[in-house]
Figure 1 (spheres, helix red, strand yellow):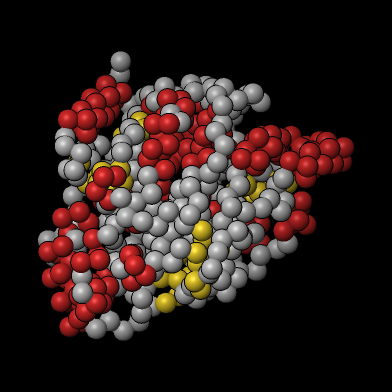
Figure 2: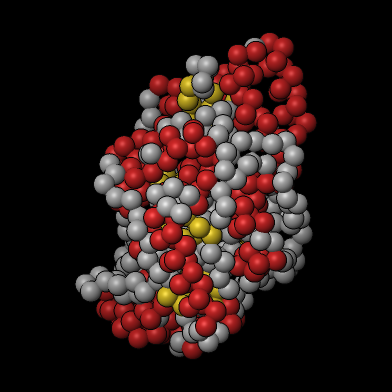
Amino acid sequence: MKKGVLLTVIVCSIALCAYLTRPAADPIPIPTATQRTGGDSAKGYEYLVSGDYIRSGLPYGLFLSGFGADNHNYLGRTGMNAKIPHSFTAIKAANNEVVVAPNCLQCHAQVFDGVLIVGLGNSGADFTKNKTFNPKNIQLTEKMLKLLSPKSYAAAAAFLQTTKAVTPHLYAPIQGVNVANKLAGVLAAHRDPLTLKWSDTASFTIPDGMVPTDTPPWWNLRKKNAMFYSALGQGDFGRMLMASNLLTVADSSEARQVDGHMPDVLAYIYSLQPPKYPKTIDQTLATKGMALFETKCSGCHGKYGQGESYPNLLIPGSIIKTDSLLFSVNYTQPQLVDWFNRSWFAGGSHPARLVPMRGYIAPPLDGIWITAPYLHNGSVPTLEALLNSKTRPTYWSRSFEKPQYDYENVGWVYTVEKEGGSTSVYDTKQAGYGNGGHYFGDALSDGERKAVIEYLKTL
């Protein structure tokens, strides 16, 4: 066994042992893991927004005719990329045909008040319907390209092949949540764990249903010892980040090429800073809130400013009491975990592993003011509601076309609805969408809660 693999196995075994032997009511420290350093953040940014880590997509002309040109150019890109949305990249396929492929900013960037915030989780994603990439349209596209432009078809084939397999599974009943868990499972089921080569036949059963998540901000990754809300992703972060490459990767040799860029990508992500709260902050009230926060909240979420620290604690479900579906699915449906831990991603000199744990990590709170909605599934629209559970709406909606932010209560302006059943209404009665738990703020008085929120605006 290689030294890097052995080290990761030992670290993960220690974490698992600690988890199993601790009392259920104790927070669990997440062990550190050595990460690759020495990358160039400028190169990392360029690779994220213009790189070919996904090497197949729709032919450029077909993409423009289907989606139209995008005139915002939030990233200030030049050439062919100037005309397409920030969440896509025009690249040259192996046969030099230009195709448009999705990039990481599909999930990890959001337009906020007219400005694109790279690293902010996209809370406006819409997987409630498949307007363009549904199986019927994909089959028609294949036939057309084979007939009219064989070279374009060759460049698009891998992307079309994958989308036919994954699209039927990528459905969320409510807009605004991320479906990355299901996407990862479907892609793994269709790829050999070691060679990463595609198979049209899934190697394990893909469960029904969707486990919703909110997308956490990238800028907090530099403080964390594990990725994902349940601290599932441990070991090398670069390997975790490049899992999106499974969308079109040809084999493990191509994966190694992409992997070589991960130090640069990590350097860029670690350089990100959260945007500052843009409105006036009551500094006297914020100072009072800081004292309350450091007494009541910092044990889990850490301290900020001078003497900054972050404890990296996983809070067991018995304590946090938030919706448990996200972490429990790793036990009831372990196929993805098993696949990953015997895959190419778990080998080499900087391996990664998935380590299931029964709870959620208490995240760093840098930039928390801009990261609504809250909890791991995005079930709570504002910080006020997060810290005062009796005000959390069972059914609520917000505008995705013209989003409005509530800078006082910190979060999205929302409407309380009487019932669910609509893709625009967040229904906390659905499995995985519950808004219970994290009741710690309920003990605060109204004045104390207002002070804590004022302080959180400063982070």
